[in-house]
View 1: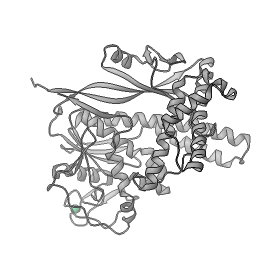
View 2 (view 1 turned 90 degrees about the vertical axis):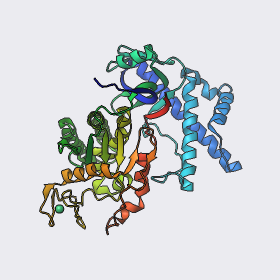
View 3 (view 1 turned 120 degrees about the vertical axis):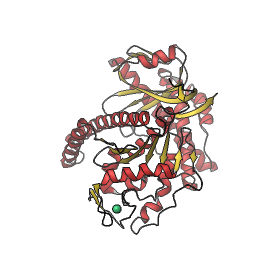
View 4 (view 1 turned 180 degrees about the vertical axis):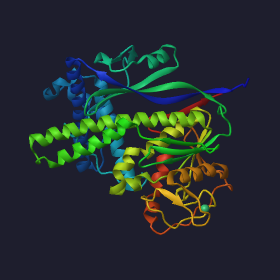
Length: 449
Ligand SMILES: [Zn+2]
């Protein structure tokens, strides 16, 4: 019998449920989304006015005070009481954040794509969404309860979360309601007590993971076992249909009713494909983190690659960034760790047999053939092997807290930059950021004994 020591950590996590509102509730949802959009635009206009006059804008808190003063006196705003007042306040907070991010981006303090000045939200052009952070937020059976909106039926069971809320191991911090092309969702931000083992159940186990364009991922473990995760059939079929719908949309005359209809069909299907993909990635990463103590992935330059139009679709579809984000916290939950290879580590160009390197390897070459030692291996398997072996040499590590650990002298010296990879270098920092920033929906907040 083995004794496993467990520590309890508080984790912020997102729980999303699809909603099945009644027609009256759907009206109320639209009304709240409209109110949030209105408040955001109202705040943005107020900020622009003040900026023109005084060279600075209002903070989120100031806007909220301003709004509270105006809403009762301006008869044109008489409808404000139809929606939860929380929604307006949160819209001002969103605007505040958008303005700050704009400034950070302009100063160069924000990594990734340059941000423009926040724009007005147009109905039908922006994502319908609003947020609650106070008031009655509950779930149970196949329902959720939200402030002002009351109890709304959900598409799937909320039992798991309801049980955790009941026994006090989870607390709802906020609820964001949003609409994709085909339905409404509520996403609860939940603080959860999570038991994390001090050590992984299979100490010493290692797996190298190559994230693919065609296959979802290819992995090789410390016993040489190869794991290939294809995107689910539904995803591949979905992608084909997506392409068909995209073409159909492009053929329709601009501004025509048929084009609008095609656009709606395309968007609805796109949302469905994204759901299938997210689900597949969740399943694959859960399995890897449970089975292996150390998971090694490549530090792919996601921003750089998405800028490359030819690869854009494939990369976005495979969700490289998502895989890494999911792995970074799931390994932590299992008492394991995620190792991210240096972005110059030539995982695909290096021979896993003799360590020799090819000067170049095009993406179309699916088989690795080594002239030096005669090794012939699937390109993805070869890359996964190199990544697996990197764990022993100690590369940049990301632990569950999202902090970097770079085991000093053992670190792999960066490989010489190859001609033709310069672009990757220029935008390389963006990739590093994708792994180092705390996960958007989950990060460990604090530790207890
Ligand atoms: Zn070789």
